[in-house]
Length: 148
Image (cartoon, rainbow, N blue to C red):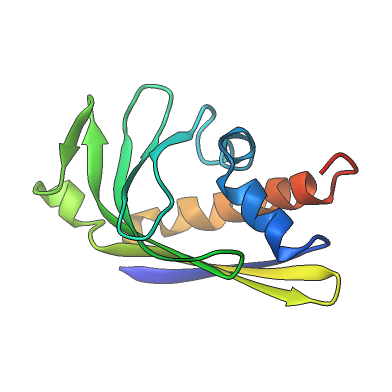
């Protein structure tokens, strides 16, 4: 497992960035870089299970490890979802578990510094390195748009 770090500065408040990250309609936009039609089912509350899914229903199963609104969010990936079935036991599922995806938001004047750290198996490093910058660029565009 390797930990990757991605940073961006968004010209918006921490609250605006947080809301854009977690609101279902804007979540679908900024995560479309990973897979068009991505969405989540569940709650962002600490201790709750959440499912990150693609249009076919496959995806990742996680638990919210920590949620300090507008400051820090930690997602603990615990398995996969294939054909609607949660899998935490197979070798493929265990290769991702546990893997943490952490979001740190720090207000710097009128902007927010967002740092994302994510644990990934070695075979996904290139994919994540290629997709995260575009995803954060979409999030930045959402937050900085005049209608935000």
